[in-house]
Length: 510
Image 1 (cartoon, one colour):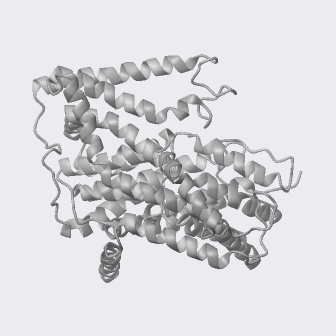
Image 2 (image 1 turned 180 degrees about the vertical axis):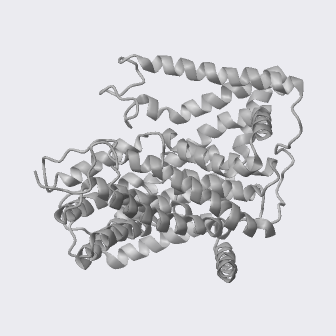
Image 3 (image 1 turned 60 degrees about the vertical axis):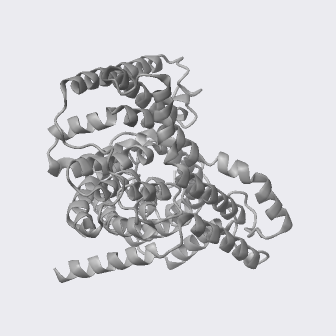
């Protein structure tokens, strides 16, 4: 009991200190300035590190030079307009806006809550968050806000629902029952790293599938416990003072609502059926050149956000027309406009994040951090299990500064994989360790592009919520996920359960 009280005090201090930080937009302005000054201070220093991307000596690029500053100004609009999370969020929110405005989401959630036990809400939300990875970034703009709405409608604290959903979507990013485009992407990078040492190494795209699928059960169980026993009790002191007037209540469905809901759900089934039929042919335009539907180059995967837009727009419109909540084109546009009106603050934050990420990438500071960390780990020459744990921790630390899973692994795979292969450990095992570290700290770094969006979702219910509030909620998930998941991998390895298709634990030179 004493330990629990002490942990809660630590979380309370994290929340207080975190909320004393400047507004997220101002924070990223300061971080941008810091990166520019630090790059100037470190430019010209020989770090004796080879950049694996080009085989050249790594150099820190001075972002205070005249050329760098003019380049930043000339690309400022492009940095913002082409910043991936901006388009993902805005396009998806247009469709979600219609579904919310018409009452489709409200009615659907009331119907769902009427058949779901309150005690099962947490694992259900976490599971949906995990499966949402199949649709790339859809979970951030879809599942996380719905987590808050569902908990509120069930009489529970909405921020606990947001935390549970965020834990599933982002903290459990490398756990999934369903294969996704992330699997072949990481496998391709791993294979390239392995072939630096052994050209004969070929990895299966689902080389971690068994491990990530079974890990889903671990993450659901852990998140369920953390949400109900640690996070939600702490949130009792966070009074709800946002505009809650339009959120769903547990009133019984009226006959006209039930009828409109049935037809709108049927429209979803028909839409998914039509999409499925259109993908069946080997010559389907939804497929990549190699015939794959799940490759990043496949039009289907590139259209996920657009499909989310339609799969909310269509049932939302059907529900609105049948229930009478949408009677004109003016109301149709008003529903989208209302959704966009709440995105102003998010867009301001995204503008400065886009500039920071651009300058940070151009400076090579993130690359230096990753390479130096890997050098230290290699020099320690620790036992296998400890080395794997070290890779997980190091990846988690680097993840606080370099968000992209593919960019990080592209930097680390050419170092970690040959290093472990020389110690007799397979690329499949190295990739599994990387995925744990990459997932566990996603949820506690404000540098993750979707982190400010989740803060905005929290402020809908608690207007004083800030970076500290969200970080304090998510620290228990991050710490427990990393520790338990690492132990789980070591035990999984000790038992000898296959990591995935054609995967091994040992590397034996061919």
